[in-house]
Amino acid sequence: MTQWTMLFALCACTPKVPPHLQLDPPKNEQITETIVDLETALAAMVAKDPLARAPLLPPPDTLDANDGREAIAAYVEAVQKLERGEGQVERTLQQLEDRWPGTVAVPLARGYRLRIVENLLAQSPTIDEPTEARIAVLLTSLQDASGNETLPGRPLAWLGTQGDTSERLRHVGDRWVLASWLYSPELPLSAVGISLDAPMYDGLVRTPVGALVSARAKNQMANIDDAWADLTQATYLALTRAAADRDREQAKWSETKKAAAAALQTKEPISFLLQRAADGLTAGAGDPRGAGGALLALAALRLEDACTDKPCRGVDRVEWMKAAGTWDPEVEALASVWRVIALKEAADSMDVGHNTVLFPQAIVARVDAFVGTNSGNLDLQLLRRSAPDAAVWLDLARATGAEGATNWADTQVAIGSHLETQTQYALGLATDSPNQNLLERISSRAVP
Image 1 (spheres, one colour):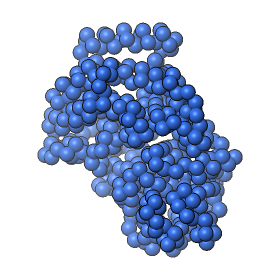
Image 2 (cartoon, helix red, strand yellow; image 1 turned 45 degrees about the horizontal axis):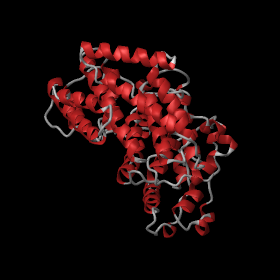
Image 3 (cartoon, helix red, strand yellow; image 1 turned 135 degrees about the vertical axis):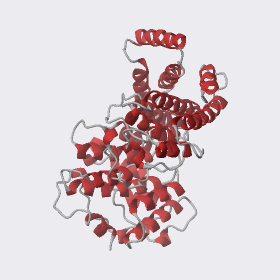
Image 4 (tube, one colour; image 1 turned 45 degrees about the vertical axis):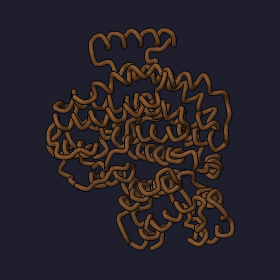
């Protein structure tokens, strides 16, 4: 069964597919002569589609040089095995990402997964629960080992209900793939940038992540000093809020926010500063600090539920923060703080909501924070729970490396230990920073 036969076999009807999804099957025989290195290999594969949904597969003998093409070779091998009916798509491609982090294997694997999602969405205007569960696993790094369809929550309920479901999922999938092209400064972006210049992808370029990928591909330069100052101030404000546990600290945070709001003439100073930072840093994405800082600002906007390309929620926001830090040491210093913010606020949400109707919202924040801080594989079933049980506490504790926790008290200790570890790492990068005292406060209180 060929790659295209397998993909289109998922759709037995004649779907209405948006123009930007209508791709002509590439001709593999045309590419062998053009591939001499990683960049030319990518140019041949994704020249017509920056989302890499159905790239041609280069012959193995064009991918044997030790210049970064090994990741492509691994992707080709995985796809060929799937076409032969060997393995399960979601697991095989997630394992590929796990083995080749920060390489072209990640966006290529995600593009393949997105193509399957598009065909599933085109198959029917309504999405049943098993299909929704499969889409959730295809568009996240979560697994669905339990396959329990009797759980009360819908697999993708956390993405909200605003707008058309299929269009919302396509947007989330597009964003997920495009962002992965920014998961390492080592990834060549010239081929993706050329693809994005095609008129059919104007909509993608107008999205925040699309604009950032395009700016980086074009080596766009601008002065980023003011934007960096905005990101730094937003980080300090958000950390101040996260560290305010006691009445006196919360009162001080309220005063700090009011002062910042008055100075900036806005009601929400953190999201205002983040948006201004994202715009300015994207304009200077040719500078690694600009590209990484822009990705961090966009991730933080999503965490604040203030992104311009909703839905902001997801389980890849903190993962973006992790990726942003690979671009520059200064970006990593701020990204490590934002990871602490995400973990601390997720811990607070779980503390308040673990035995209330707020649990479904709290568990999304918890899973998101774990995914982005190198925690263990997490199961989709966590996001389908309306209330926790012993299995939930066990899974969450295991994500931190702890075993045997079957109640909230024990899991809270495991979560606190993980927060303390991440905070200590951020402290190591925060020398002479105004964030230092706040991080020390969070660290000292992390473990109950």
